[in-house]
Length: 295
Image (tube, one colour):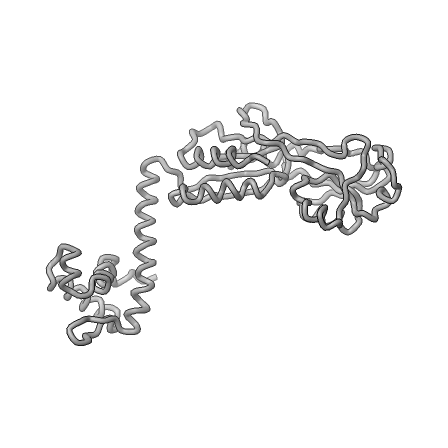
């Protein structure tokens, strides 16, 4: 790639001529001589091979090409300014990136609220968001690939901050044979029917969680696939209630009338990487996650 022939300072000079209404006014705003400003713009036109300004009466106005280039240059200068600000923030200890790992069962709405509040405070810090299931979150913490982690497991060796719990509910399609029994169900009723479960994304010691008494189980890799299968009448499952609220309202899923265990609350915890100090951006995001964790 060729090095740019026109500098940021030249683009800034052109903007000043246009924004302040002329060479003399731009020279005053930039604390330069008028001849220096005029030479800079003339040199730009020579380097670009395109006329940027033309004289109309006593005023210099943009040509069509100049107007198009000026619009692009404003974005260029803005990005350069943001880049310098980010470098300064990093020099002050501000992180360039926060890696956030979240259990897939955690409500997206709560997470989105925290991230929306974080954006205007982020000072250019990026967020790498990754979803895992069960021990997959734990492994990310142990591997050091998570600065912050939200998990339903109380991970040994880490100090948790307890977030509001989430509700799991046992459901099936309204026409599923379990609903057709027309009575309160026991776990014995479930044993002969297909259960859909979400696979633990951890690789070292994956866990089985929840009730696993069904003789036949289908295991899938994500929550959306599982809910689609159960909505089509393929088996029953326990889902986070927030994730299937629309299907419950629409009637494509219906809570199973279990005598016990049809609903259960699952604790959720926020953890921080214990092997490195938290930077200011990570602390702000952690506080916002706690603030927005309420149901």
